[in-house]
Structure formats: structure tokens, C-alpha cells
Amino acid sequence: MDKWQIGVFTSVDAGLGVHLDVARELKVPTVQIHAPHQATRTQATADGFLAKCQAAGITVTAVFGGFEGESYADIATTARTVGLVPQATRAARTQEMKEISDFAELLGCNTVALHIGFVPHDESCEDYRSLIDTTRDLLDHVKANGQCLNLETGQESAVHLLSFIRNVDRDNLYINFDPANMILYGTGDPIDALKKVGHLVRSVHCKDATWAEESQRGTGWGAEVALGEGDVGMETYLSTLKDLGYEGPLTIEREIAHDRERQKADIGQAVGLLEGLRAKLLG
Ligand code: MG
Image (cartoon, rainbow, N blue to C red; front, side):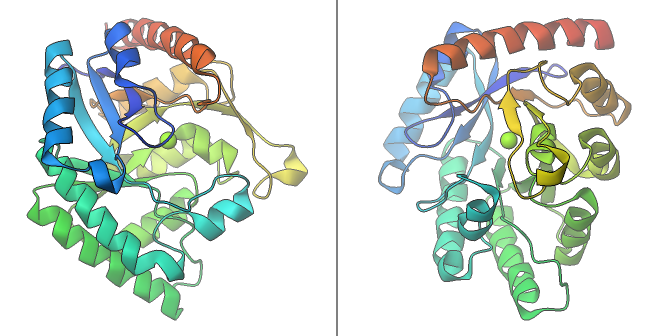
């Protein structure tokens, strides 16, 4: 595969991603997909989706899990509802994530990914130990499918995430780095964070955001904006990825599902921005 193939975050029938048609129209060669609803995670769905991808010359590079009941309404709600961390849904969601891994295998995809949630800070607490066990159990299933699991960044600082991954201690746990999330959640400067976790980064999101007011950081959202218009600094981001030896896809995310026209226009502009930077930095 060529270095830094451009991609788009898409969905089959669930989640914030754009429809595959957008990737096709923009002639983007890779996609990550948000896993479809349980009822449509079938061989027939996988075959149909793959046939469309193959006809358009598109490769699926990762399948993201997501669950009923998750809400990103504000940071407190996100902490309460997202990922494997909430205890009431942990067992059911872990089972569902295993099924998503099985669906990814039907797509011939060797990478699954998710927001694990807000990992507890007290590493000696029962909840933290239990989350480690849950993650290991999931990783063993994912490994049997020949896959790795990439954790989305944002909800943890780089240091906290690294410590969690070290404690899980499995060889198929990596990172999907999202620089905008570090800003949105107020968990740290994205470039500093990338330098700290870079050796574990196996996939990335190209997304941009502006910081919340200083007094609101960590409690109130920053704002997600079109690529190049936020505080990430796309050239610095890509040159840092280059320095780290990252050669995988650059997957564009634009999370404005309520405005599909603008979403498509912004993604088109992002493709142009990334193509320009790729030509400049990789020659
Ligand atoms: Mg992301």
C-alpha cells in the first residue's frame, strides 16, 4: 500500500460517518467504517459492502465499534455512557465488540477500534483491574480473528493511556490517534501527545478542533471544525507522523452528520489539503 493513503470515516447504517458514496465520489482509496447495527452485521451485509468497495477501489482499513446508549452530548455524559468503562453495560458491550470483530473479519479487515471510555485514574481500584481483565478478554478474541484493537485517543491523557496499555500487556493493543479529540476533551497538546504515544499509533484520524476557554477545559467541549481551521496545525501533525515513521492511512473525520452537504464539502476540501501536504512532505 502507498504511504499515507487518504481515507474517510464512513458508516454502513449507524454512527457519525459519511455514506460510502462520499468516499466514492471523492475518489478516496481507503475507509474506516463504523460498525453497522447488530441486525445488519451479517455475511450478506459484509459481502454487499465489500463488493461496493472493490468496485470503487476502496480498502476498509478499520472497523470501529459503537454501542446503543452512547452519547457525546457533553463531557460528563460521554464519561457516563461511552465505551466499555460503564459497568452496567460492560459485559454486554464486550460481547458485542467481539461480534463486531467477527464482522470485521467478514470484511477481511485486520483492525478493530473503539472509544474504550474514561479509564479510571486510580490504578489500584477494583474497577480499573476489572477493566484490564475485560480488555484482555476482548483482545484474546480479536487476536483469534487475526486482528489488533486500536484505542481512540481523547478521553485519556497520553501518559494515562500509555500506562493503561502497558498494564493490559497484550501484543495486539494499539492506538488510533485523533489529534482533535485531545483538544476537544482538553486532555493535552495533540503534538506532544502524539510524540509520547507514537510508537503505538497504527491508525490516525485527520480531524481539527479549537480549544474550549481555558476555564472550561476538561469539562466543556472545544469545537470541532473543518480540517485546517482549528488548533491542531495539520502540517506539524503530518510532519510529526512522518518523523515517527507512520505510513498508514490518513482518515478524515468530520462530525457534522446534521449537515450532510457541508460535511461533504468540508471532506472534499480536507482531501485537497492532505494531498497538498503529502506531496510537500513525502515528495
Ligand atoms: Mg476520531
